Image (cartoon, rainbow, N blue to C red; front, side, top):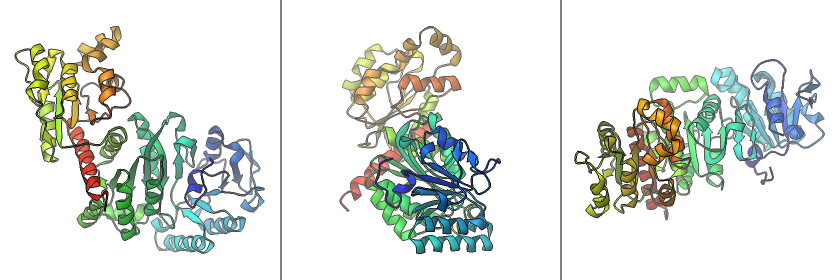
Length: 470
């Protein structure tokens, strides 16, 4: 962790960490000392609790002031009424970055809101930066560092970074991402935003060279004008995707008891967010699938999409959604189709969507799509009855893979146009397709999702080209 310790860098790259309020009793954050020891950071972790002397092999200090080294980051786990006293001790110690994980602030009502205003004023007057309260802090996968207990060993570093207003939802996203083949860079859970908020972390991640895609989960925006400007600047550099909570009256009421937010997202707010270049997901699954699409795909040059499917009905679903999203079906030239026409049976439709059925020509159809200059993106819908393919996979998995893709060709053209795969059928077949198409090709859940993610890709690159010089 040798990065410059600027105001937000301290949260992701701390050299020393104080854990204030650690306990052997089961409860929020009780496993954090052991987790950080497991991450190999035991020599940088300094637990604090006046009632115990040792935890997970680490010496426990009575107070922050008793720690014999300077502290870059303090994680506060004590009950809410005690937080002001702990924050005062951190200020006296000279700590410049604090994560208040404790709940019991603005999300609980007037008394909690007053308590939150008190710690916000303390931090502001002392010139320190504070995350939370009511959050789980940060994750930095490349550095193998987190202030929450997650399965870091299952996470492969990537270029997707997340800002989540909800701590637990951020944790859920992290749990889901590896199973979807997504690779994470950084995560910030901002909670009630007494000090640092979504705008601060958006600005930071926009300038972070390791972050290629920014994902937001927000229930409100604290500083509207500053956020829109930050979003516009960030979107000129990298894709910014969002799922917005509080879009209905019921949702807005729920946010007030969750993170203390006082507003949600109506149609006007969503329109302003879109104008700033942010793509808005309809649900969390779509958010993650689209983030992976951006992380793995080159720019989409135009609106022309070619669909290769083993099922005509699934091809129709993709075509319908493409049209609804403003994309069009590509028309490969007769020259591009000539070689495939020589191989195809009389019943096979060589249009778009191209339904190869049981012809065994899925790979050939894919090669036509990838060789055609008239095609800007490709949707692949590999389907085959599990009862048919499972015995083949047991005998010769390489042969099955060769029926669907030429890995060499796919790698060769990977940077030229987006390719998205939506395998359908038995769950084991869907999982097998991860191996068949490889880790660099995004998989999504349905033909409609494939169309939607390509539409997001096209809209972003169109927006960026229009605003690059603005």
